[in-house]
Length: 237
Image 1 (tube, rainbow, N blue to C red):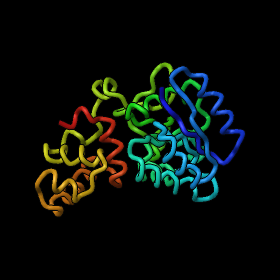
Image 2 (cartoon, rainbow, N blue to C red; image 1 turned 90 degrees about the horizontal axis):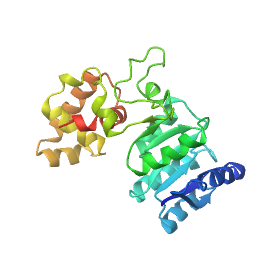
Image 3 (cartoon, rainbow, N blue to C red; image 1 turned 90 degrees about the vertical axis):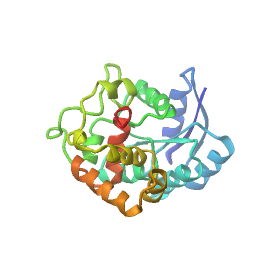
Image 4 (cartoon, rainbow, N blue to C red; image 1 turned 180 degrees about the vertical axis):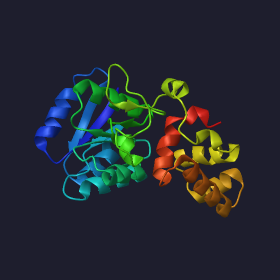
């Protein structure tokens, strides 16, 4: 049974999500919260597997709750469910540790499946979110390279079988073996200092590798690199 905590400042939304998710045999809503402190307290008390949260409530409380939960409770996966689809909101949530970013226009089955996938450790993104992170529009984005939309869901789901069958991101084949090692560690959330210790190289060398990776893959920052890396993880050996 996957234990879910709902965090939203609208009572109607929380009650609707609760009724929806509790219809699933393998999902159980164990609590709900409408403030940052209540959300943190309930995560600590209830130990949910997944927190479904809208980060836009009470101005900055939602995103602050996301950051705190991800930092203090690493065994709990955070899944964003919101109306906000600007690149800054997406990037901030994922940088703080959220495992997925969904928009509220998805259908019930897609939401339930996304909760299951995030619980397994897979990243979940609504259509169009990845292209925002990469600074492109849907029309100008390259063909799917590290993500797919399967027949039963419009949610972008990164799973191992799909990764293996997908083509590589542009520039990926130019990465050296060491750069792939660094990229794998970036995907796991390691800092430059932690990568330095793990690979037994200097932090300066790590910074050079990171800069090279971003340049080869045409990415802006580590957040984008981590997302791409998670989507092709089996290939980072």
